[in-house]
Length: 169
Image (tube, rainbow, N blue to C red):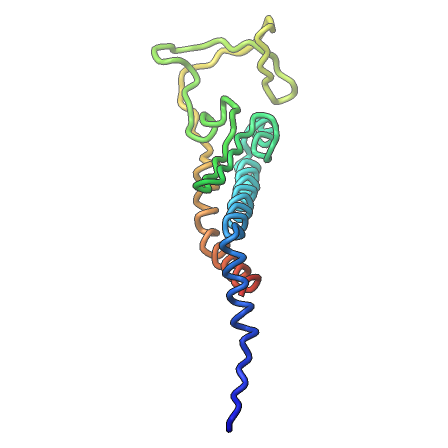
């Protein structure tokens, strides 16, 4: 009579891993991955703002740090949606460009004062500067950061998938 020994320990380990995944580990892993992508996107955004030498970027830079004032960071668990942004009111003007005057105006007075080579807006100042109507080109820091992160995503996803498979299988 022949005896056949079958080692099912690897198979058991595999099914235990699959069972563990069914208990919510996939959602947890995806949420952590998505959060990591968001943090990386904010880093890329800040780098682009610095690289493009955005004028007076302190408030804008700070708004692109997770959980800082003026930051928008929403991560829904159900459909795994991450929303990243800023509530700094001038952010879109810096990115997209803007006119210096309202439509139909040729000039506009802006209250404030000069501090060295920088103009400081101060609505209570007696002095200020007179702006001529023109268009200020945008820096496109957001658009460039999106492009950079989109190029990074395939490699990041592949690395995460490899790590995921190594951890569970």
